[in-house]
Length: 255
Image (tube, helix red, strand yellow):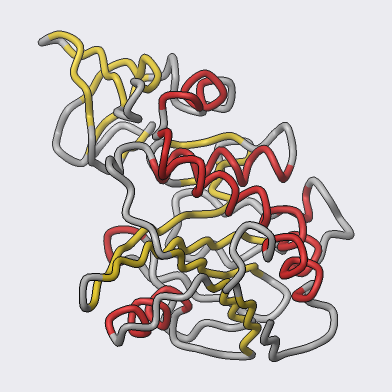
């Protein structure tokens, strides 16, 4: 185990939990980095594909899906990435499986907005970024997670983000990491062999879009019917039911 950073991070406890599953597992806590995902991707491309949990207390150039920026400050957010030497047979539904694991570890009120956001009362609580890299025949899956611990500024946003302190006032970033790390790694390892289908019904219990009128970034609109066994969003449109594999989704009418 390798740990850098303040003692309030449960690095040793997490390492002890995960080590039986992944003997080469390491935990790192860094006070500042551009992006935890970017760092693990750089390492993977250089041939360093050992299983790693990398926590960034502050990110100066954090990245979200579709190239969006995710900035983080110490204590306000929990930002971390997990690198695992995996290459799943089918990636479909992986971000949904990750979101489900996080939601179930946090609180019953946390819901899931397809494909990669966590919601609390229709406000964004967190996001997921899944990437992959390979070098010299070795593959690395990198899972990035950002969760709001305390309220974040809402400038330029339609809706103010949610924060976990609304549900759990005394929760710290370290406490949150202790809740989610082991179940998340277990979920990803299980996904690599079984895919999304075994998780479909559990996802639907947390689905924030099912039964709502939505719009996609591709210009489609219709009624969200839930998700398929491979994690596609099932959308009832005027032309019939369509399975959406990749798109941004809005529940607000486009103007």
